[in-house]
Length: 185
Image 1 (cartoon, rainbow, N blue to C red):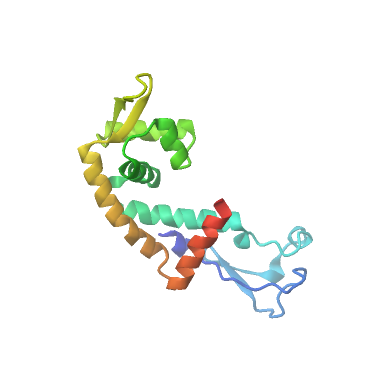
Image 2 (spheres, one colour):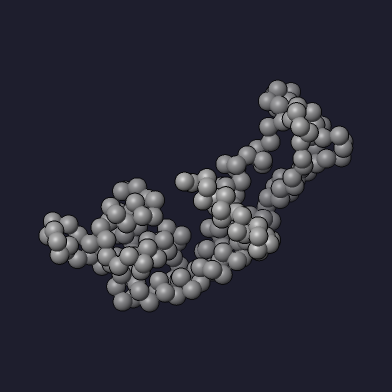
């Protein structure tokens, strides 16, 4: 069962003052297969005003992330996770770099990048070599297998994005990317 099968969110516009339920008494929300009427809100919930979890950005971002993870695991080559793919795609792009720099480039903390690199090295995708400018430093790069796998993965990635954004028009796709970039910068 996919996330979209379990969770269906029907957006119901709130009145401007957000303190009154919608005029239509038939307004309902679908959540995990159950229909919840606004009339059945508890007193505690009504004290919060018109707070609706399913309209909160954190909830929606998490749901989108879960959907992306689902699609990624289904369509990505070599069983790569999203973080493993990002690691390898960035190495394909930059060549060799330090583990710390790689973590910064793909927005991972030191502990997380260390574990990701370790797993990718065990699979034969990443190798380590001494930095020619500083023998104390190690540089990471893709092996031949890593390069071949990453090229296949990079070719598969746009299809995953297309499936993720299938319900959006071309202009909506551009807009969502623009807005997400604006949020994270």
